Image 1 (cartoon, rainbow, N blue to C red):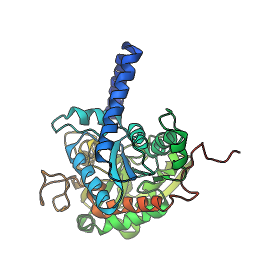
Image 2 (image 1 turned 180 degrees about the vertical axis):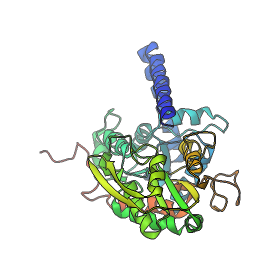
Image 3 (image 1 turned 90 degrees about the vertical axis):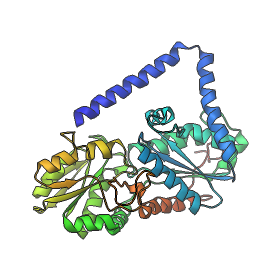
Length: 386
């Protein structure tokens, strides 16, 4: 699986390189025109939908799956319902996901746009209060990009799109909402919420429940993000020792490692610059249910976790270890994907669950409470000189 993943990353890099090469072949005026056309499309979207002077920009990595698009639609609908007086928009930070959504392969084309262009359009539309809410699960690489690149560039007026007067008006009126498990306390809360989900509760009573998170690449642990997976597992295992948490991209927590934990023993798991010792009693359960620990069920959920034809998928490895394993759920009742009905096979991601969506919205409320305080973001035009 890791080999396939790296091959895909290489192909993606080639695609991106080819795209920029094509741009370089054009003259500067044409390249600028293409940029302006893209920005103008976002501007028109914002201008046509603007109803208020306050805005919430939701930022997800993105996906290429129709199920994920419908999940995002449900998240946006929840936000619009719960945050009266706020306009709500959704952006993708992945260029590949944006391009494939626009291409509309097997689905109707959709435009999500990237956070940079959304924020520019939001500023040009004159919004007075801006909340950028991360839909990431942990405070990892993607969240770092949202907070320290997109939002910081916006607050620094990087491209000179806004007047000094407007930038001054934004002082202490922009905040960033944190990911689902920003703090250890969030991991504890999420453990309780997940255990209270009817399908999860039924599955863990009858065997193993293994959650597959994404994780940061090996050797990186932005903001202590990866440790949240281990903390979540510890809190889940305080409820039931049938719970396990692993990742796609975090060393020593791959599916093979989770299977070793099921066999039992003491394991020293490296997380960034630290090593955490985890103790597992041998688990003789012969049945398991797999769930994605991600906001949506996309490529990782359907391929890395559930694909029966992939010899390295979690489904294949668990079944190969003699554990009768299901990767699809038949009792989940909140399916966002319109083609799925109650009782059909489904992969429920975190964003499918209303109780989990409420946790993200709680983070947004916490962010809104910081507006107008010293915990909000300052602009360079008004920040005190050192």
